[in-house]
Length: 123
Length: 474
Image (cartoon, rainbow over all chains, first blue to last red; front, side, top):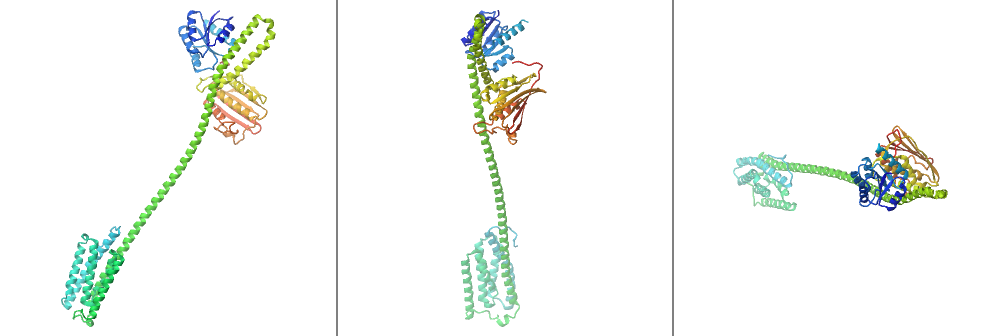
């Protein structure tokens, strides 16, 4: 089972995400970008990062840019309550993130996208 | 000698010229008269009058020579004095035979030029009185003409006729020349005045023209100002409107985000519950399914509304991304669902031909929403809206046909003008189709209308697209 890190400042979202994906991934949860980065350092096996966009201190894209700098192999996604923004569009164009998902999340869409990305990556 | 052609512009100059002319004429013809009078000396012997005449004529010649150095008044008074002296001396010496008495006429003539009328009259009357006195003295024998002047004999001679002719000529010439001088001067003055008046009139006319032009310019400026004010009012309205829209957009985006998170909670919770039921409460699954489904449908619907709000609130500077026109139209319909419900039947004929439309989704959303809102507004009671899409020759064609009230032929060309509205004040800004038109122009699209009053309106939107082989996904 692949390890996935989910970052969101809403504890309920973290909890629900962990419950819903517990059978598919080994889910790590972090309440902020800073917490997420330190978790990644202690869990180098993490293959996937999904982050909320709007968070205090560091937004999703800023966090993912830092992740990509230290762990370029990790596949990153954004899960946002907002519509697409310029930051997200740029990140998509630069392939920093592979896709962005909208809240309320569609569990199947997320799962499929991750599987697709993982298989592409392995090839 | 007689500088008549010289420019004479002031009354003083005229007076000076008249005086000088008189002096010169008197000097020339007077000398002639004096020379002729010398015959008298030859015929009748020397007489004191010859000396007086000589002195007077010498004086006149001297005055004529140095005329430019003497003041007008001095010359005038001296001339009058010399005339008086000459005539009186002659009258005293020759009585009624005096031929110089003709010059008495010149006294008022010269005086009136330089003196006021009453003083002229006074001088003339005193001269005449004095002349009459001389006559009276002759009458009483106190004065006597020279003995050699025998009246019977004298009047028959030719000489007195000649001397008389000369004196009359002097007087006449002076009057003639002076009068001519006067006439010329006044003609000059009048024509000068006429020229001045003409110039002034022309000046006034051109000033008038200028004023008229200025006036017209002012009118033009006023009209321009009025237009500018009107434009400002419209721009202000437009600004207020766009500011409202922007605030609404910011509000919508904020609300969307805030609602999306709790929706995510519900959604996540339901997914979790569904899984749990599947794993642990299979015997209750049938009972719980409708409840779960109810929550899921609720979340989906709420989520759709939020998404449509999100689409609408997209900023102008939002990125150009591939847009799905069908999703955009569906979002618009979700936003309008409360107005459409029980009133308008929507029929969608969507194409499945693939295409790629790259644009600012929010703007296309706004353009479509404006067209659909107009279609809905046109329907008073019940009606239908048919939305058809097609891809043809690298063009996406969206046709929206309503069964509303229609647009009159005279209004049809104006419906995309800013602020043109047929709705009641406060009901419409008249900006909707203008904004739509501008948005479509920005993407090289077109906007066309076909309408018949009472039957309905067909709006055709075209947008250039790239045709692709397979449908794309966001």
